[in-house]
Amino acid sequence: MSLIGLLLALQIKAQQVNENFSVQVFADDFSAETNQWDYLTTTENLFVLDKGEYFMHRRNETKPYALVTNWKNDLTVFQVKAALKLGPATSPEQTIGIIFYIQSDGKGALVFEINKDKKFRVKQLAGAYYKFLTGEVTDAGWVKSKFVDVTGAYNLLEVKSSGGVTDFYINGNYVSTTTIQDYAPGAMGILIGADTKAKADYFQVFATRAVSDDVHANRQFGELTPSEKIEFLFGENEKLKRQIAQDNVELIKQQADLKVSTMEEQVRRKEAENEQLTIEINSLRTYKNDVIKDMDENVFLTLSNSVKEQAEVNKKLNKFIEEIRDSLSASNKRYSDLKLKQVNDLIEQQKKIQAKKEAVSATKEEVKPETAKVTAKKEEAVKINDQPKIVSAEKKVEAKPMPVKVRTAIKKG
Image (tube, rainbow, N blue to C red; front, side, top):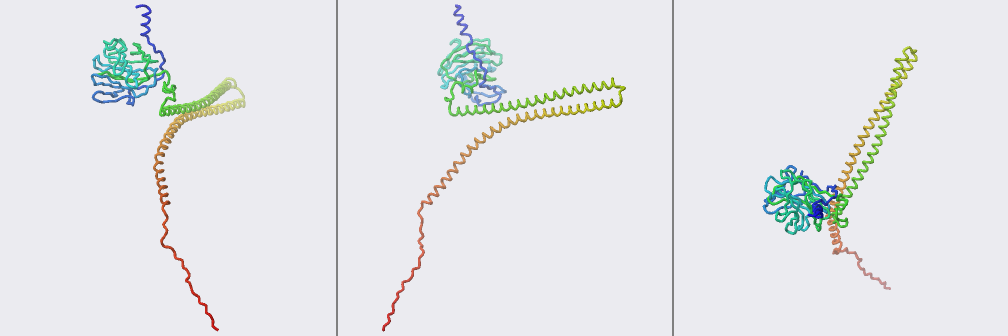
């Protein structure tokens, strides 16, 4: 082989994805049941949690099975880590691995798997069939590797993908690279082979930055569905509330620290003054004992009173120091209570918001029947008012005066 050919071969075998995957976006250590995985007990599959592990038994003897997480992946630059091991059976036909880039139409995916014969392979789902991307077709794509552990311990399988280029690792050791350029972001999970027993200890996904900072990593805000927009805005609102609460706590802490620092400085000054007074008192005692043994009694009494006065001052200073220490202790307690209150207030605020939402929803449901009743009453009143009025057949008879004929008497002469 020529030098150029050797260099090309070395480049092909070298890892090509060098991003820093520092942000964990998904993780499951199988310590408790979640809604991210299938838990089945059927004639063909047994998938259950067992003492902090995900136990998998594929009973079908001819077809593998993909356990796909319900976590929605929008990443094209990512790292997947999965701790997997095959069961106690010694058959080299048993396989376990990671499946990723699962396309929405179910006709595309990549698989990285190992077997009990210290071999690994990478294969591509193309339509309804698999295409081997490692090894030879005659060996079904399997490649021997000293990095595969068959002693019963977990094997750490790892994939790093960026821009369609994917590197593969076994127990921290790089083993292969493949390039698939035309795949959209897809779901991920575990592929268990036919007639295989296996266990998973954890399954983790990492990104180069937080998904929330990239709005689902690959889509602009305007491309999200209404429900996704609401979810995103709620998340941003919660983050803002937490940041405000944290800023308030930090401000209170700074104020409390300043007050504590000031009081501690006062204590230090008083302790220094007390120490100086103690030195002076001891000096006076020494002077009394060694110098003024033959001193006049009045002078001695004067000095004694001075010593007594200094002792009283010392006593008051000690009392003041204790008061300051008590004040410091009380301040620390108030600071702790304030922090607890901040947290409780935030929790209560969230409860009130949730209660308001539920109350509004319930009120809307109650208003509907009430509105219907009011409408019915109005319609009934209109019907009554539209009916013709009934005039009573009995009418009051008015008394009319009787006609009286008046005859005029003519007087005859």
